[in-house]
Image (cartoon, rainbow, N blue to C red; front, side, top):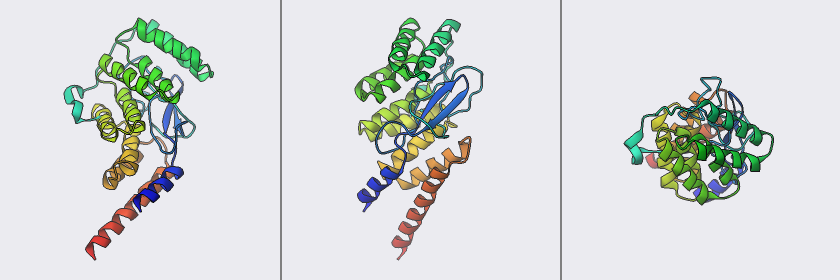
Length: 257
């Protein structure tokens, strides 16, 4: 039965894959602190330039937007429902804002989440067009189980910068955890409309389609796109691809009989 298989699969698979920025141009992602499935998100560690994506390799020596969670090496951040701003928009960030943001990330990386949260709030208040601090604040809220607060924070982030793929990717994570799967689908697709090479958004979409929407063909396509974009080979996701292909082939054979 699908339900039985899903429970077993969710236990096998990573708990919410996320990306953690631990230095100016370093991305790490992996098993998050949340239950039973994988999400590639965007946590603390973000961008001084608001248009970078968590799943995209760093293109400058600046901090990139990232996501909470992790320890493996997977890259990790909605849909035509919000087509109005599908193009990524550059948002100028003052040098002082970037410095304060970097200090907040350093606090987080040192294990001082409380101070980091206060610092992200301060940067967000001081620079009202800067979305990255809000994305990171939302990730901390998710880790604390404050999903409704995280949703509001991320909506504020997308209002500041409608071209922030990491903000939409993280919003998808929040919707998925709230059980609002169609909205999560839209959020991941929105992130991909902004950045089609956003590896983690493909991974999150695959997880959603595989375990929640029961759309194995879409899941397979999303996983394969993730694997094509991943910075390094990912044996675990490759295994999921093999499993899905077998399941789809068996289904076709059964229908043909």
